[in-house]
Length: 403
Image 1 (cartoon, rainbow, N blue to C red):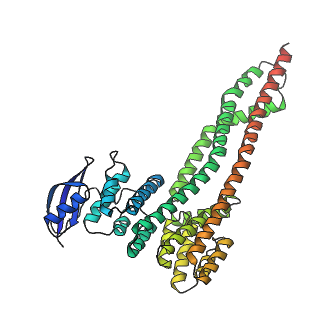
Image 2 (cartoon, rainbow, N blue to C red):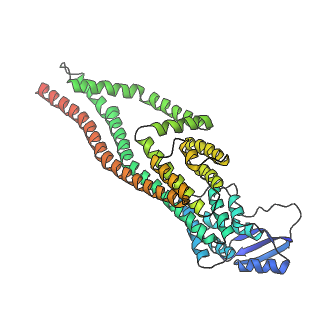
Image 3 (cartoon, rainbow, N blue to C red):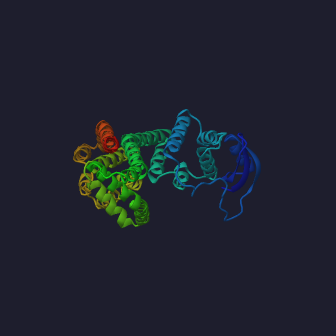
């Protein structure tokens, strides 16, 4: 089929250009008009050309919120019976020209060139490998809208868990920052003033004040060098994270850390079982689904374990054996996976394991918030109170000597 190069105006006023496959110029014009575009120029495409247009293949990922909104919008439009090119055109017609709109325009150009939606999604870095594979399975079953609905649920679930973890850490982190700033101000600016005041008196200051003056002197003399060393150490860690072996070792240490390691393992297992369950339910083959879930994991230790699991499954080993060998999947999830594999209901069991782990994560984060909030406030009060008590005791002693 001939390939035509075009330039067209969107109804929102933006311009789009690219290539599409059509029988002739008339069909190309009709396809552009059906997508909500006003053709400006259509001509046979020269041989061996690559469209640039509004392609975003190297533009980076969308934010989690933008990706959820894009997936939900497209799923809703397709579920309402709107054709794919028209649905993409409606999203691309956003007057604000958000990144979602730009990405929809790029995907629409790919569709006009004759590519499938899954292939177009796989060519853009905004979408993960698992995302494209679920859509491909939906295309094979003739239910792209249903596949996108599944993806929207996966993305919303992952975003909700990430936000729950962030909310659990925001309060204690903010208290820690306030404590550091308060103590630094007192030790760096308030306490040193008492050193000059006490030099005029022959009486030795209280023990608490002597300790406080010593700590204040250390802060003034070594505060900036300590910050410089800390910044250099952070920069070194960022540089070292480029090394895959270092990231792997770091991930394994984090997973072995008390409390936080257990929670991180639950979060990674929950994401794995939820994504894997939906991919298998959508019709993706198990080895391919596991490989795509591996690419979507943010933990290097889990990625390495899943890579070995994929190779084991391809050799013919059972799923339960391959996942148990990673040592990173919880016993509860492994038991449900074993039941699902034996009964032939692997996808429902994976989703059930994901649901149980999600409730455990929510309970753990709630417990953390309930413990860390009062503990952090008590520690901050004790720290600032001890400094204030030392200063107040010194003031009283100076007053007694002066009187």
